[in-house]
Image 1: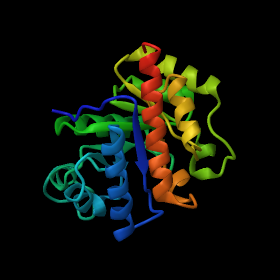
Image 2 (image 1 turned 180 degrees about the horizontal axis):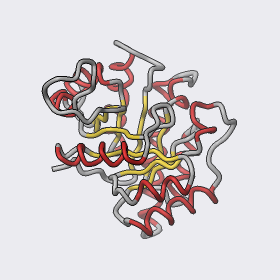
Image 3 (image 1 turned 90 degrees about the vertical axis):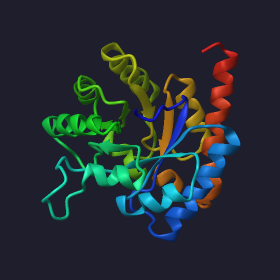
Image 4 (image 1 turned 45 degrees about the vertical axis):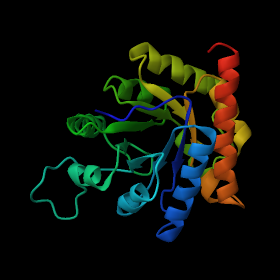
Length: 236
């Protein structure tokens, strides 16, 4: 069975900002914060770091940043889905703007992921792309304008985009989780997006380029907890 995710959750992407022991250091910090605040945390890390992260943490939901769709056998240098699962990954990212995929590729990858009970975390740029990907029924969609990714766009998604994305995706499959992540650099933005209707928030450069990344991990996961508590008070 696929790993269940409690909402609101928080997602951390390391990309290739860090590697080696630093990945493990940040993973352990995220794991401690996940336990401290009782929040599910998705941790997306390069394939070569998955096993070590999984073996040294207890609470993280670890995802691979990409996989190919081959089966065991030939395929030198391709990333085998079964190998990711054996390393401890619970799912995979598809169609990030730094690793874009065509709609047929996305469908093939989602189908392959479903074969091994992998969560599928799909990225989309525009509302139109989010709606097209939603038809393929991934577990999560992260609609994020590509110009805001990586801290280069000077801001975060506006709330109009956020609400339209959520409504458009939920109209197709209400059970798809919708996250916002592009451009997030502090805990208040995490809180604001979740209170606006997102089931999660996430960050990569906002953590990796922070003055104190470990403190920022704690701040953002704490903000997720605060939003969860406030939503409960509101009966949502």
